[in-house]
Amino acid sequence: MTDPELRGLDAPLQVLDPSGVVVGDRYPEKLTAEQHVAMLTAMRVTRRLDTEFINLQRQGQLALYPSCLGQEAAQVGAATSLRSTDWLFPQYRELGAFIVRGVPPEALGQMWRGTCYGGVETTDYCIAPVNISIGTHALHAAGYAMGISFDGVDDVAVAFLGDGSMSQGDVHEALNMASVAQAPCVFFVQNNQWAISVPAERQTGSDTIAQKAFGYGMAGVRCDGNDVLACYVAMSEAVERARAGGGPTLIEAVTYRMGAHTTSDDPTRYRSDEELQAWAARDPLARYSAHLTAEAVWKDDEEARANAAADHAVTRLRDHVFDAPEPDPLLVFDHVLAERTDELERQRQQLAREIDLDE
Image (cartoon, rainbow, N blue to C red; front, side):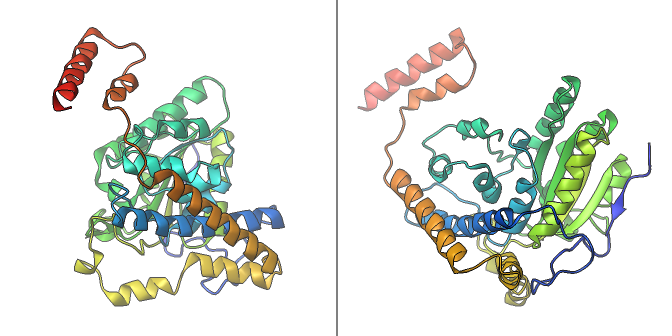
């Protein structure tokens, strides 16, 4: 096996600097103007929806919501480089990836409202159900990648992880298993600096997350997670390597969670305003907008269409979620096994009797 690739462990791969100017020689020339516009539009829609999700939760319409503010570039750049048949295994903060795949915003809203079960409809878009338990889906991604490899399919599985997942044993088991099997799997870690209130440096003793790839015998890449083109390049190379039989890749996208961990969190208790302001100056949308505007790719017409797309998405979300009817509680028994067992049927009948008594 060739030596693992450990690019940019001190200086992350970057295509655009914070002001939107091209740096280095890694610009993805194959991207068309239409693809650039689609990516920036997806980032704009993601940010608008993110705000609306928070509004709905504050209005009592959603049980919980984890904001992805500041991480739009990492998610959109990575997801855009994939085929529609490549399977995504998300944690719970991947709104941008869902938007790229075309998942209706109301489906995500109903999931966070609790009016559907586990977001199972995302499987229609080759996206596994949202995983709340930290890191357990890394094993799902590795297992799926091994399966499609056995089947001779050249698709790729991608696990979206956070820096906090580096403290979970499941993730390390998945990395080891994928490497031993040379499975076509990419582990995309969004290092947003905070796992709830615990900083990233307390999640790992290594200098970076990307360098952990060396210990597992796989390729490791560190990229600027606020640079959508750097994320696109890093993921494009990783999936190309995987499809060619080169095995898995661990990508660390260095970004920042601008909002709270979830709507139940108060980030002012553990991080400073100075830190927040420093990262706000690296805003991924402002960076990409500046670049595309300077290149005359993003003009008034594109701006208007992006705003209209965001308005439409927000309207769909609110119309379908606000005061949406609660589902029949008995439906939960329809999503456990393909055929209901005697024990499940007994439990279902018991719940039905209790509901009748309450009524």
